[in-house]
Image (tube, rainbow, N blue to C red; front, side, top):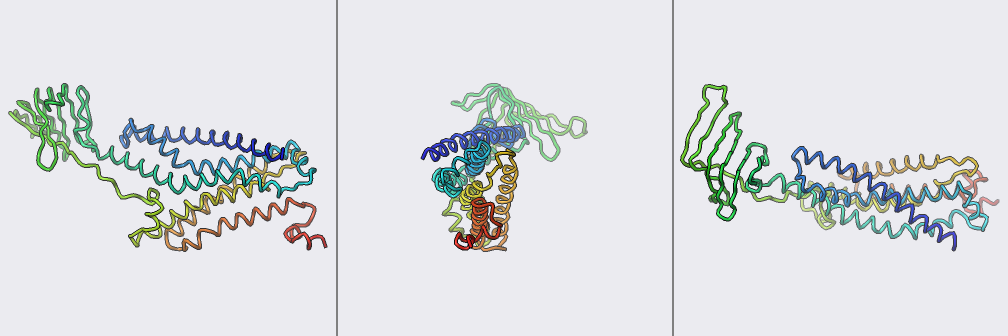
Length: 371
C-alpha cells in the first residue's frame, strides 16, 4: 500500500511537471508562428492570443499522451536507479504488480485524452479557421479609423480619414489610393460621407476633390477635379468555409454525405480513436522499458522510449494515410498497431519477470518453463 501511494504521488507530480514543460515549449513555438502570421497580414494581431489558446487546446491530447508516457518512464527509471525496485521485489512483488496501480492512475488521463481528441480537437481547429477566415474576409469599412492609414484585405486599397462622425456618416480630409492593373489612382477630398448602396454594399462619396490617375512618369498621367466621386467599399458577408476533416465532429465524420470524402473522414476518425489507444499501449510498454541496472545507472531506456514513440506515432499516421487513400479498410486499420503494441508490452514484461531463463522459455506459461 505504501509503495502504491508513493507511486501514485510521484506519477502525479512527474506527469504535471512534464506536461508543464511540454505546454511551455508548445506555447513558445505557437507564439513565434502565429506572430509571424500576424506580421504577414494572415491573421489579426488582436486575435493572436485567442489563436494561441485554441492551438494549445487542440494539441492538448498529444501533450497529455507524451507526458503520461515520459512520466511513467522517469519514475520507474529513478526507482530502479535508487534500488527502490529491489525493495519492491524483495517484498514478494513482481513487475506485474506495477501494472494495476499504473493503469489506475493512467485511466482518468486516457479518458481525458479521448475526450480531447474526439471533441476539443475539432472544435479548436474549427474556431481557429473561422477567426482566420473572418479576418481575411473583412470588409473595408471595418478598417476605416480616424487618423490612421488602413489597408484593405487584399492590399489593393489604402484609406486615410482624418475625422469620422459615425452617427452622421460624415468624413473629413479623405485620402484613397487604389492600385488596379498596374495603374495608381489617388483621390483626395476635404469632405465626404458614407453611403449605403444597393445589394447591401457601402461606398465613400468624396465631395469637391481631386483625383490623380496613372503613373507620374508616363505620358497618360491625368489630374482630374470632381464635384462628387464615389469609391465602393466591399461589404462582404463573412461566409463560413466548408469544414476540413480535422474540423468535423464525430457525427459529421460518420455521416459524410460525399462519397469521395468518406475515406478521408474515416481516416480522421481512426486517428482520433487511435490517440487514447496509443496512450494505453505506451504506458504498458513503459513499464518494462524503464528497467535500469542500478550498478550502471544509465538511461538507455529513455533512448529506446523516444524511438518507440516516434515509430508508434508515425505508424498511426501512416495507417491514417492508407485509410484516407482507400488502400486499407478503416476496421482493419484501427486495431493492428495497438494490438502489436500491447503484445510487445506483454513480451517485454515476461522477459523482465525472470531474466535468468532463455528468451523463448520466458514466453511459455510457468508450468512449461519449470520443466
